[in-house]
Image (cartoon, rainbow over all chains, first blue to last red):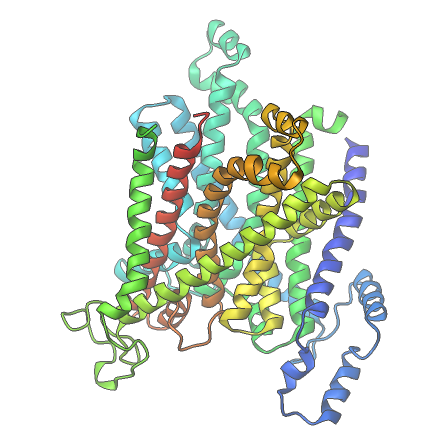
Length: 306
Length: 270
């Protein structure tokens, strides 16, 4: 396991370099001049030149790229143009809120997905199965953008049970986490049902039942572990999607996380800050993929030995 | 054969999509209210005969804005998907047919683009390009083509080994004829299904980016813009939010059902 972990972590280096390069390319190679965008079309040429030099944009592109990489390796993301504060500090301030939201959504998703998936796989084709999978189809097809406002109208305005927006106690977390988690729950529930049904058709399940285990015990002890691998894959992929999905959710619920910081930065044309946010999001995404791979290896020896 | 075309998903999806298309095409003519006309006497006018969905914070008719929004949102989504399909097919097809280093390079590029979260990429692009419908469309195309390129490449690589294609090649068909007579007809099915799902995804992406303030400039009525503007008045006028929510949800449902139905109808293995 140790050498597998080491190999996976080493393999992160080229991926991280690729992500950093792509971020740099998007910000620096896209047509349009950030300096003119910041100062406006009618700015004095001396001001434009001054800002260009201050931001290091007057240097050749390759030079800028190398500077960008060496500073990144030291954890230096530059300074925000608007506030002058270090970008890394601003990003780290907002990151916990986004991680909190994503973690809560993950819990919601796992809770719903596992209940629906297990229930549906108990009696395939029954009313329970059809009902659970019907809910799952509904959950997949409702976009975040629609579910969020609907939940706000229902649970905050009509029923008054939960606060409308903002970050605070646990009550504030419920609606955004549910909005973010439901789509993932639906996808995972379907995969879980499918792989539980497949596992139940295996010989070892017949053995377990014939030696007298009850269906529930056999399901939990024998089928569940074998059904876990595809579920973990999908969980990993979808957790990555949770991180970026949170951008829209944060805006809907005024959640003060990285997504809102990025939108503010885009609005004020604060390019170093935009760059920092994009990097933070994409590195988190890469890290989630790493954790998925490691979990995968922990569950299934074939992965780490193969 | 005919029964395949009568599956419930296909019928329901086609009905919803046709209704949406009709609403987008003729709705603005049938309900000839100006979606931009500000009338301060009608601020937050409730739902009623004159204004079936009420009026917004500037007294603009919500139904008129919704119908004009349908026109903009649906045509942008259709255009983005069309460009993505054509560009993706050409790139994927070229990679598959020429093979070698070019194929390898294209696929690695697509891998990197797919590894990067799509909405993040579109956000960063839209941030640089600035808000605006055209820029939004370019950002969506930039992430949209990769899926189609992968699909077309995979299909061509597998179709190329089928007996009838090998036979046609053995009989002396040139690449052009092979492509036109044998590969394209077989490719059309999966591509049409994927495209239909793609429209649903792009409708949501367009609405999301507009909602985040990176789409059409205000006061242009798009569904995402209406959501964004309605957000501030959720307490007093939830109908401003509910209208675009239902419109987006219904279109996504319609295109997903249509895609599902087409998938069943076109899948001759099933």
